Image (tube, rainbow, N blue to C red):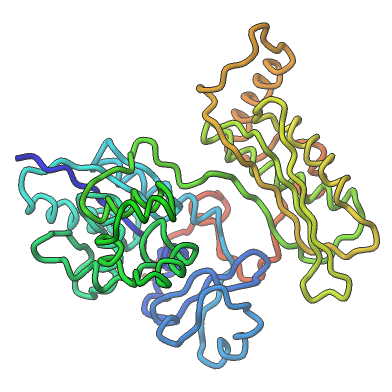
Length: 421
């Protein structure tokens, strides 16, 4: 009898692992990776976790501790991480045609097995092949549903001697009893606290909860999670999408006070967001802009404004115009702005959008222009064509004082073999 199973593949400490691929001397050494502008800890090696350093802690609070214990620190090298992520995905694509890249370090695969030993062999081969061809260690969880597969991945990460875990009703019912409810995919703290107040402490408790109560209080999304815990697959892998919006934001190396400079910074975020939007073949209906001062500033200010587009769009010229209008509404002179961002929301598939009966000639011209920009910018030199509104912020980098090389994407930084003879 053929059994349908799902595999969840999760890269271990992905950002740290990427740094170690080209710097093997960092293996078994404490390593952390910082966020934009070297602000907070966003990735830790196992050695750092054992030292008690939590995620998201501001770097300035642990700087003395880091120096004292010889912890290696890196700025986030997203160019390198994204390229290695694509390489991992290509390796995984060899195992299944039904595959979804859920995030930069996670993927789901769909399999049909006649015997359980096939699942074990496949999981073991995934771990070995990804490590061999990319240098990235991964953990694999295989189960009848995506939610259970994610729980199996968590279990695999706790097992030092094994890098994969296969779910079995007969042997692994304890996996649900050992998993706090907030650790379940799709639950988190948002629903976890409310569930705990009602006596639902673990994944097992949630699985055994009354479905009518779950549906009436938490809605269909949590109800689907309950059914997934009961081995009833109801999250369609073909229609899954990890993002309901696209956010691009960042803090500045120094404060900005002038409107035009702030608009240039904001335009650079719009450019990056639209590139992601077009890569995923989506249109956006709502553009939201926000600006803020430092939380440590004497004059604090935060404001955001959403703009609803008359027609869903992926045109950089249109969205830059909207973002400027939004900034004009919320900008106030006399403040030292330290952070800004843009969010594209209410995303729709491009092929599912129906234009007006008479068409729009100007929009057709913009679409052709965007296609030409995409083609040119996909060459060896990235972002060779860009909007003038971005100004001096074109290809601007955050403050990154500990940035590693772009080993796989820059001809000048490709590693070379040294002759030791």
